[in-house]
Image 1 (cartoon, rainbow, N blue to C red):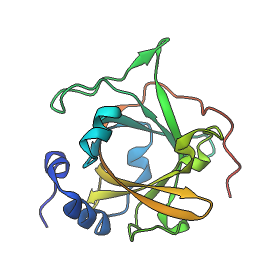
Image 2 (spheres, rainbow, N blue to C red):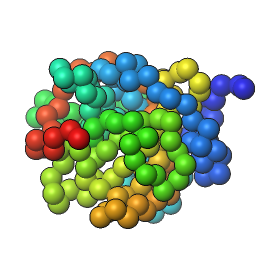
Image 3 (cartoon, helix red, strand yellow):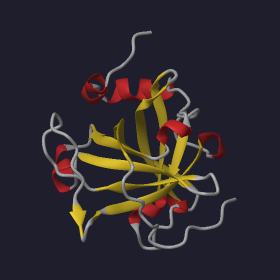
Length: 191
């Protein structure tokens, strides 16, 4: 099968993105660790895009205990063709939505998007009132054996109810990690 490029992924409609997610491939955590991934929100309604953002960054950091965690960073909202530039405040990137990275097979997903990894914001140390706390993002490698281009989808997990969103996102491997963010609070113990 022909490899999918970042540009092709960003141009896909919901049905095509769903097919890529369903046929996604495992992700090599070692490729993620210590990297910033350039992110693009895909197929959100135009009003939602105007109220939020199209470009963002996801960061992956390996902890001394071997676990993988991450966080989102705000970026300048320039055209997609331009480089991702992190927004800085007080000398550090602006971060939000911290998450733990876990195998997808430990979760009951509302869609059959298994085989990849789960970004679990409930385990990321986000505050009790932080709306990202209930967010879950299954993520898969788009091309077999290549963890540099990823596709993710978001759903909300509230009291055992799993509700899908229209939100897909593409992630392209970017720069090396230059700043390690501290979670907003101590994450819950690993189960």
